[in-house]
Length: 382
Ligand code: GLY
Image (cartoon, rainbow, N blue to C red):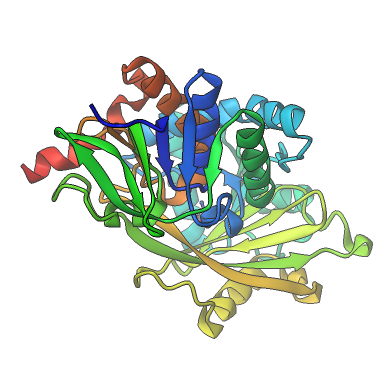
């Protein structure tokens, strides 16, 4: 029988791994997280838009269902974290305005609105004038838009801090170490060997290492698909009190085929995102990326050029082959996955924590996770 140091070992201490660890520890299991920098990862860069409706893509209704379920849990999730840790997550019920800058954009948004209506989603068409009444800083040329009252925001950095503290208070062991190899014993996952030569043995292992999840040595061939890194460059500006409230809600548009969004935080930060670049594990900020973001954001809200630019950075979205997450047991007994959240990692954090904890505590995959089984890829490979 394999030695066991912990009931559940989570490989990856970004917000997804931490939420899984926290919720699982609340179910009475002993949990260890292995990550060189617990609380790091893509949430340190993400704007934190909670946008299941305004980011809806055609053909992704199961993901919409999961995203809506996670969004509906956010207020309680954030309140519970704050009550436990004293950390304000920056969860803000602002709603989102998605606007069109020209006639083609307007046509596209109209189609999206019709799609929303067919699905019974709360999404209202506004004229350009009505959009500007809600957000006076919008460009005069805005042709119309969609007001989605339930697409909100959270601050990914505060959220990560709160989750680290919640894990600590719930008895999760946070090991600042790198997992170097998956260990298996008798045909099941049994833990990991660490880069410093040590090992952690566990009854169940959860892979939550974002776009590096499939790279862990020791994983059986074909068990997991490649989780591709999709780089997003993001800008942080500061709104001086003189200009507040600069924007009152998330504002977004598609400009020249690229998503651009502005997320105004209560503390005066304005986050502008994001590029979408598929070029490997590169997180360098480029002049071209910053230029495009500023150019597109300026078309949307010309007044941004007055604001101090205080930070630029880039993160990697973990994209699965169908852009939907991998949630639950893999074909290797003892190994589960919580990865591949692509553009929706922050949004899907509460649901992922709950679903994986349910599975780890009971051995049964919750209905809401069934469509996201990691097996959907290994079967295709068989
Ligand atoms: N959800 C926003 C992004 O991935 O850029």
